[in-house]
View 1 (cartoon, rainbow, N blue to C red):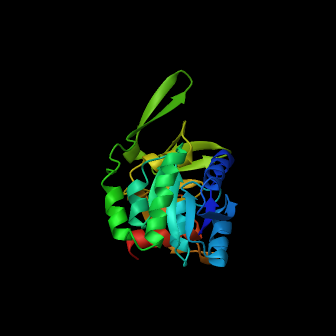
View 2: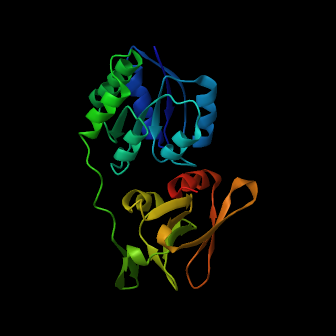
Length: 250
């Protein structure tokens, strides 16, 4: 039996995965959650063979979660976005399922996990096979529209210092002004160039080209000062701080 944990933010998707897996004889579902923090504790406690891991969770991203856990089960990522495929395979993912996926497509992923657990498929060979099916996402978001009254302003992404959510609204902050944009932070995080933009908090995505200083803060977090007219200070979460240190090499 493949001992399996489902980590999924959307209840309809969770129910769909549960229903599909219930039809497979080799799967034992241990538990499920929509929280990355709870998932980390469950993974350490239950030590599953396989996890189905959503990219967008209720608190942190699935990719951030995978960086935080010490015990590494086999992973099948599930998401509605294809932008994370290459990054997921770099983390030794067994497969990458784009929602909505069929039972037949899920069976392919589970069979790949079973072959890996049985020693009949090396992770390196599996990743090479999967990578051949994907190409890096190059169509990054370059121009962001903002409607004010009857006018639509077009913002060049290079001019954005950071994006921040406030009362469920998302604003693009430039050096001396801000614009309301019709995107969720999750959408922006998926569509912006990851070499330029980094999500430092669940409510903030920063343009790394505008970072002035980063300093340690209490509780293991960090504070970031950006180059705008207000000399804005932004909070970096502990999980994002760890990933940012790896990305910037400090």
